[in-house]
Image (cartoon, rainbow, N blue to C red; front, side, top):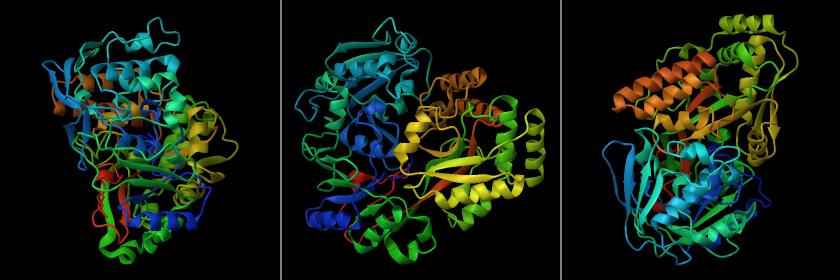
Length: 535
């Protein structure tokens, strides 16, 4: 997610270069078949379980192969896994295909997976995506603040190509989940110095680092095809260059000039004209991606019942439909739940969803009820990263709140995506913030468990409701998808009751390719199907 992927979400990081570098890079590579694509500086070194944002995630997912992979439509297929067998969705036997190797030449074995999962789940290793291992038996022991054991009891290596997994309870999502980034294997060399490994990662995926200097921080990352890759998504190009831009406007100018091959976010200022500008090179697709405004419960006026009333009032003070049309020209649609409308089982008519509709009268009423608990004081600020193309809609949102509730509401820019994510993760941001979630695998439970489980490291709004946690657990353990969807609906009704955050928009991606690219398709989550880009 991720921010992705949670978390992060289609924001580019600060660039130490300018338009000239991007143009030069693309010209150098155009004849070689290397694809240049927009990106940003990853928040952290490229370690799978510690990558929970979009800019690192788009690179990590090219460098690694998982037990499964997701095709452009979000369908999961076996990748390194030969067979994944279960009779009860609680006990799994996983058999690997033979002869897989990491790019350092060492073998990918069952131990490569079990060791990586144990490392990632152990609390003392502080991996951002550790929560994904919570269904595995023994996770509670290794995730304790002071763990008494180092490995999960639910993982057993049988032989070089076989391991077993025992879950705490049946899970309807577990097999689909196995293509998700934190479940990737790690080579032995990683454990010598994980931070250093993340600067020069060694995976088993369709690409590898082009050289020891492939990652030029705040400038670009260069990947080349991995000749030993044996999976179902081989590279159809001669490499990828992830070019880091300061603004999407600059990236769009490069795209039009043929100096950038693909761009996954058209800037707001071009949304009205990009289809005319690009013709058949313009790309649109509804995707599993949500935008929201969050605020942590430690911020004054946003804890307890007062906080619930204020979040509901703020939500109903926002004219999402007007913002969608005026700013996004229909490429965003007002949110109707806490997940994404493209996901299987989506229900746009959940109990409590009326708080997502513009209703100035009710907004003022709820705000007054909150004032009766504790009179409002100060300014309502919405933090956003100014390198991600968010200024327009955040300022429109703040103005809608200001005009409806009569309070001082403003957008507060931070220079880079990394700046804002670091403060959110540290729980020190002290104000509301824009964030989003881009699906890591295509289920509603993925969105909900990642963002709102009380123990999730990617729960950015400090949401904590044991009843909600239990509903998610029950949904995972449900015997059928239909029963699971019903429990997910109940869980979301509880999110509306508590108003965990303020859902804003579902995305319909607006992207483009240059005239040097023959084929470039968006995947189900809004990123390009990078392996399938052809020049």
